[in-house]
Amino acid sequence: MEFGLNFFPDVGPDEKSAQDYWTEALHLTGLCDDLGFSHVRTVEHYFHRYGGYSPNPLLYLAAASQRTKKARLITGALLPVFNNPLKMAAEIAEVDAMSGGRLEVGFARAFLPQEFRRMHVSLDESRARFDEGIEMVRRLLTEEHLTMAGQFRSFEDVTSLPRPVQLPHPPFWIAASSTDESFINAGRLGYGLMTFTRGDAQVKRWLQLYRDAWREAGHPGQGRVMISFHMYCAATDDSAHADARSHVEGYLQSIVDANSDWASTSSKDYPNHPKMIAAMKSVTYDSVVAGGGAWVGSPATIRKQIERYQEAVGGFEIASLQVNSHTCAVDKAEASMRRFAAEVMPHFR
Image 1 (cartoon, one colour):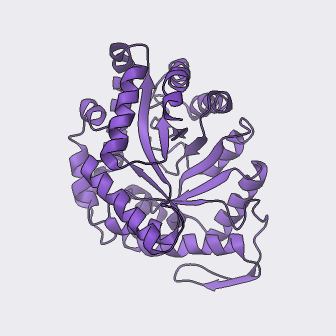
Image 2 (tube, helix red, strand yellow):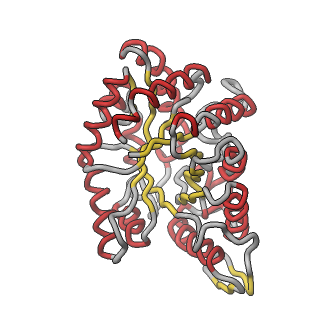
């Protein structure tokens, strides 16, 4: 099992500046090779403290590529709905070159109504724009003198530069969170799956849908699954909870605030989101820890949390850890990472 870092800024200027956030993130990124964390990952969001400090994940991953020599660099995830595929393909290949072929590219549909409204894009076009965009990027990275005429974008005789280091292209991932179709599509296409914790039975069913679709499409193996978790490791359970509680609660509040528009919004492309977001308001720190979405405690406790979750969902390959939620101090995050690397990670190698 692999463990990496997931940088998901959930702060605004009144809580922590973007300069401080990314300076701290780069410091923690610089620890990855020595401590054995396998990847660095960040998001694409806009306009809100929920992710808004990271409008272009490739920018941060380019900087991270100069702080590490081994860690994979993963977009978690790019949003084709808001981006021109010609630009995405070129920037993907550029970071792949800068990193010596360590980039992996996650794509997502986006899901915040306020982002669609401000970008003047219809929520009801989300799936179609996603499908078209990811296929255009794939072909731009693998073909030359390419002509494509899509519903939303078209171009003629394009050879995208630079060409990617990894052939035929950097590994692709699809982020899925709410509909069976998204999990099945990721498996059918032969791409890695990014998701996050929900009820154990639901996640287990979704992972099975993904793996069944993977095998039915004739891909070798069973795919790759990456799940996101909050993580805070301290000497004792009590001290870990005392440090982590307010920061995870800050993240939970930010996601509720960012999704508040779903209370008065509906879309054919997001049939489950109004109900799902309404349920988020009842989520608490204690319920997240109990449900496995936050690994918090002593090393011995976290080892048990990981083992329980692996068994409950039928296994997965990669854990992407948010180690500096909300306003967590960088020295606290570093101490947590070091203890986790020394006393938890070896147990799963």
